[in-house]
Length: 174
Image (tube, rainbow, N blue to C red):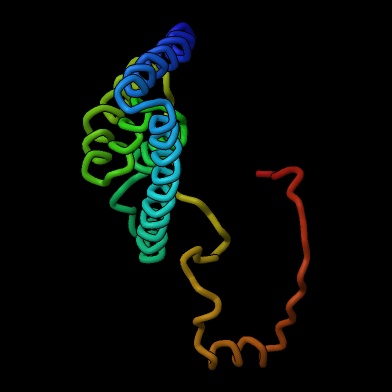
């Protein structure tokens, strides 16, 4: 908690000092324009890169494989977007590095993954995985809109009725 508090004190102070120096060199108005422009460009770049990563994830999951850029890459992308939207020169620099694919991959593999692995080894972070899920014969990757029409007709001609309902599981008995 102390590190986070220190971060909230040190980073704004450094940003304030940097903006003061930039303001001396460029002038007050130009500094304001620079901060607003980096926020706008950063938000636009974050949106583009986020949509690209999302499309990549959807394509990979649709094919039944893991996305190339895992969850950590997505977290770093989100953090980069937040840093770019935050006013300041230092945060914009780090945010831009986290948005660009090459430096984001380096940051994810060189900084975030080793830090997370250390935290897991120390027992500070627990990771739980699910190997098998019983969905009652339902294939989660099956697209019901691409089924063969003959199969649909066979299913309908067997006298099957479709009943739509909403439900909530309140207790599961083993």
